[in-house]
Image 1: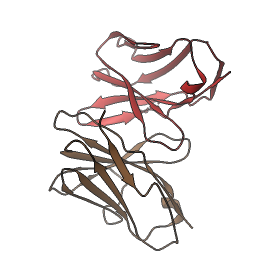
Image 2: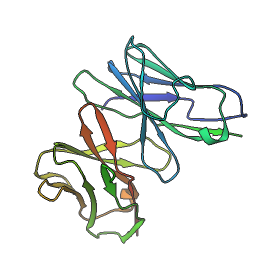
Image 3: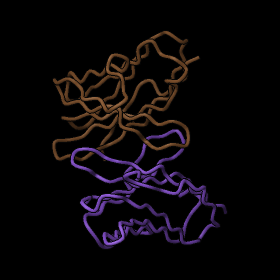
Amino acid sequence: GAVVSQHPSRVICKSGTSVKIECRSLDFQATTMFWYRQFPKQSLMLMATSNEGSKATYEQGVEKDKFLINHASLTLSTLTVTSAHPEDSSFYICSPATSADTQYFGPGTRLTVL
Amino acid sequence: QKEVEQDPGPLSVPEGAIVSLNCTYSNSAFQYFMWYRQYSRKGPELLMYTYSSGNKEDGRFTAQVDKSSKYISLFIRDSQPSDSATYLCAIHNTDKLIFGTGTRLQVFP
């Protein structure tokens, strides 16, 4: 199966700082990258969709200036949470998709903002 | 009305039991249905994928879609403690996946 890595797996930061999460597709090329957020005991909520080399499309209610997405290559995408606050504490999961619209999921990054 | 509804559980069953997990959806135009398994603090992994109505079997797992009642099910036969996880149904809507809330399953020895 396809291998997706996320780094870091866990991060704790102070309120007001920025955090960058990396997502890599190790053995395939991802033309599309989905970023999800999952709060405890809740489902995955799509935050944004990005295509390689294009600007991301954000879901309603997700601030594009707060959650910066870069999808500069077919194997790497980053999500930067800027000026993080405690309410941003969540489990962030990337999901690269191939041109055949097959989605894979990363192992997730647990963000805790103090 | 939510596009996908799923009972969050938790569901606790003894080892060897048959487990039935269910979701309902609102839009009759949906055609692609998935079941994902998510272990604690991990990303989801695809279990089953079905198109339109009918059944699909893979080992101990059977996915069932009833489009007339907009109801999808996942059955697990001979459940094992290693099946303990959260199971999420998902529907592919144009270019997005819409997830249910997930049902937490606990299989005890």
